[in-house]
Image (cartoon, rainbow, N blue to C red; front, side, top):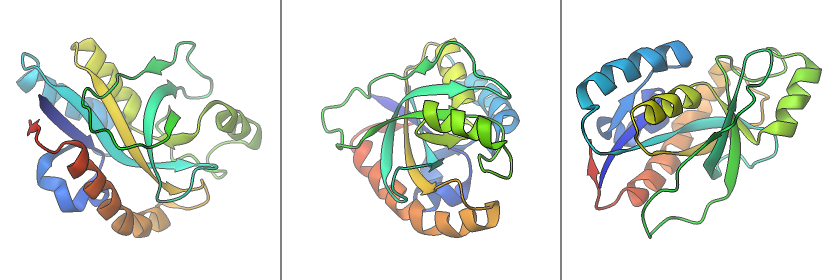
Length: 187
C-alpha cells in the first residue's frame, strides 16, 4: 500500500520532513499545494495521510487523536460533515477518535467571538486550518483520506507559543507516524 503523508509545515514533522509533503498553513496554501500534487499523482493508487498539530479545548496537550469527522465553515457551519476513511492496516495504535473543525483562522478567543467559539467547542474536539482542503481533494480524486493530530494547545496560545511547543511535539508525532506507516511505501 502506498501512503502520501501531508503536514502543514516543517516544524510539525521535522524528524521525518523528508517523507512528508508540506502544504503550508491555511486553506489557500493547502489548495495550491494539492493542485500541484494531484496533477502529478492523480493516476496513482494511494491513501492520503494528514498529520500535524491541532488545538483543542479539553484533549490533553501532547495526546494524539484519530480524526473521524471534519466540520468546516467560516462564520457558519456547512451542513454535511466530512467523514474520514478507516486506515486499512491491522497494527493501528489505540488512540481516541475526534471531530475536527477546519477553518482558515487560528482558533482562539482573540479571533472568534465568545458565542461562536462556544458553538465550535460543542461541535468539535479539536481545530486546524488545512484538513478540510486535503479531504476535499482526496474525495475529488477518489483517494482514501486519514488524519491523525497531536494536540498542541487549549486555544490559549498565540502563534509564537505554538511554534515553541511544536518543537517538542514533532518528536511525538513523528515517532507515532513512523510506527503507523511501518512497512508501507511512501509516495
